[in-house]
Figure (cartoon, helix red, strand yellow):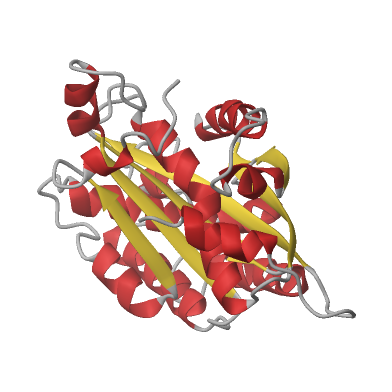
Length: 283
């Protein structure tokens, strides 16, 4: 996705006097599959949820209400997809807490229905999936950005492109929130320092990164982390689709999510990874 020149026009444009500027908030959560840690993962995804301040509190209340609806399943304390599908007794979604796969699927379906009910003009989801194995093969031959770096580089670009199309010239700042238990925040901070320190950048990329006023780590298992839980659902759906395990459990969740929620999905694999050369900074 070549968004630099387009975003440069958005960022540098200015509205008429008296227009209301918009502070952008975006919440990012990731998922991986293939190994027990991020470094050895076969596939990685980072999903983001952008929502305006005016809707955020209502979204969090609505998300929590769905989690707490126990008419057809137990109440859920939060959503975390890897815990949801786990049979571990430590999981809040274990059999001893009254959960089975039918009820787990019902929870996901209820949450997707809620996401589908949101104002599509004021909320949007962004999903970046990367074949990490294909990235490592390239790294053996050349200097090449990591799968994590590809996701963190494009995260603000995707968000600003959507906001710029909806509200051209009105963006005042961007505030990014990450799940504190994942590696994206540290890489994002390092990349932000790198991008804003280049005094000779003329492509509009520096202006984009200078709009980012803060990056904050949150716990995804709280009400304040509701938007991170929504992002986790879509990130997990992406890696589940990119690397199916053979289990039928929620195998179609990505297809349903794409149909039901306002979202943009990008995948990087052997067919298009070379496009990131000279666009995404290496470590």
